[in-house]
Image (cartoon, rainbow, N blue to C red; front, side, top):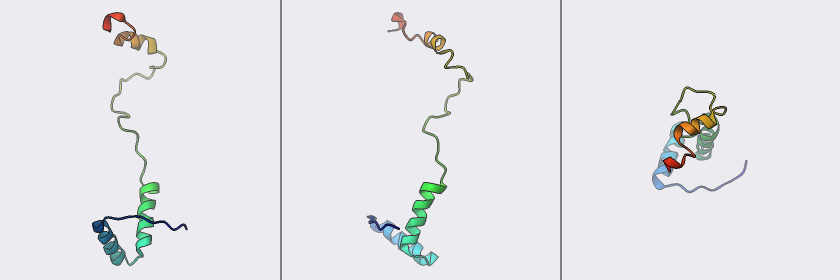
Length: 79
């Protein structure tokens, strides 16, 4: 294990000490468990906005020119 230093707000430090006393574990172990839970156990979500809009089409790459035309991209009248 590698030793490190962290800075805690007084309220967070108090909560950490209370949890250590309640669970009868060292403060360092509580911190390691919390970091481990945050980084390994929690499933990573998708980036914000992914899946928000579904056109129902799966052929966008093949139809990109048609789609751009429908949206008016490249048409000087829409500038």
